[in-house]
Structure formats: C-alpha cells, structure tokens
Image 1 (cartoon, one colour):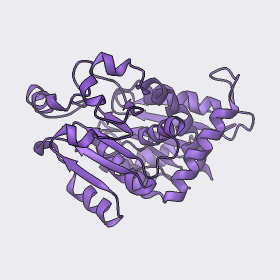
Image 2 (cartoon, one colour):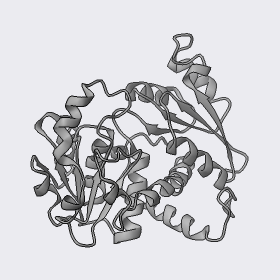
Image 3 (cartoon, helix red, strand yellow):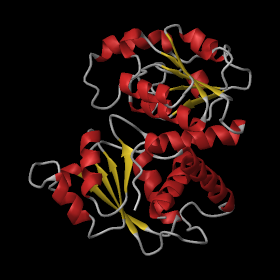
Image 4 (tube, one colour):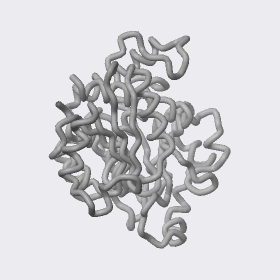
Length: 308
C-alpha cells in the first residue's frame, strides 16, 4: 500500500513513471466519451472515498471522473456531514472505519498534520487532494501539461510569481529537485519560500533562485506560473497582501520578458485582474484549461500507482 501525500515522498523515477503513464492513458482515450472507462479498468469493482474539509471544484470533479475512467466509483463526504471534524470521532478511528468501506481515500484538508495522522492509521492508500502545506496532484498535472507543450521539463526554467510560501510553491520547489528543472521564484520579502522546504531542496541539489524583482525572475524562462494571491483560509489582511503582490501580476509586459514561445500556467481559480490579466489568461500562450483537464489524467495515474 502506498500513499501520495507530497512530491518529496516519491523517488524521481516513480514520479516520472506516473507522468508517462498519464500521457499514455490520455492518448489511448481518443474518441472516448468523458466518463467512459479505460479498456483495462484497473479500478473495476473498487471505490474511493473523497473527504472535503474545504470547498472544491476541480479536485472534486476531476477525481470523480478519474475514478469512473479507471472503472470504479466514488463516495463524497463533506466535513459537516460526518462525525470527523466535529470532535465526535478521532482521526484515528475515522481512518480505521473508512478503511473498512472503500479501497482508497482522497482528502482535501486545511491541516496537513491531520492528513499525516489519517494516513498513519489508514489501512488503504491516502491521496493528498490539497493541504495548506502542499498540492502534489496539481503539480503532477502541471508537469504533464508542460511536457505536452514543451517537451521534457528537465533542464527547462520555470518562473513562479506571487506568494512564494504557499502549498503550490512548496510543491513546485520539491518538484524542481525531483524533475531537474530550474525554478525562479519572484516574490516580496514578506512571502519568501518556507525555509525548511528550501533547506530540503538545497540538500537535494535543486536549482532555485529567489528574486524580489519580478522581471528578473521571468527573463528568458520557458513558463510563467502564478496562483491565487489569497487562498482559502488565508488568515491575513487581504488588501495588504494584494497590495504587496500587485507588482507580481502576470500581464502582457511580464510575458514579453519570457521566451517568445513561453507558456502561462495557473492552477485556478484565477483572480482576473489580480494575479493575471484577462489578456494573459485567455491568450495564446495560456494553457490553463489544459491544466484543468490534465488533473483527471494525472490523478488516474496517481491512483493506479497507489494500488501497485
């Protein structure tokens, strides 16, 4: 039994194999209806419980479709509809109970600590659908999308603009070490990356540079990526944070500093007019809708990896 909680937990080889399987499965689905199962149906007769402590659009739908395409089914649990999270039942007991009912669990949580605790006591694979610390499934979708458009990500340069200390930037830092790409992080001093994750990256020989000037971060890069400036449950002064990040907006001027064939990525939902302009989000260099679709394909491969 294997869990998928952080990019850093897997070997580079395992991560690359997941991406390659996702590419292969996606190609084999040409001509299929969106919920039609793959021919081999590796999840046939099985079900995945999806637990949501936080609202969700892409994670909820993409995992549901992923399970259907693998030949299985899903059960959705919201925090306000079960004992877990109310103090009526411990995380340990909830993990033990749910392990009796399904074959896999995906959790979208506000507490990575709770995720680790759940996985510790679960008898079936646990997938991190998002936590405040990391968002590994989204990163795998992003790498799949990058490679479909630009070839191998190895040796390429990605620019991350905005908050350098959130779940997406944390997972991208881990990915830069595992997939061997250069990561330029453009962020204000107040939102520099997590020191412990940077220390891990340095130990694992990741090529990461941090820039206060966004122009320096995006110069001649292959891809520019950003994220929502204020995430769910982000306990900050929202107006103050947005003001600090205003100069890190991805706009036409910023895109022109990257390579002429650079792509723009955003994990969505996008704050139009904030972290990115309409012109960029809807422009020819944008691959945001492809990223959203690829959540299904990457997560199918992650689920299959957990079962092997």
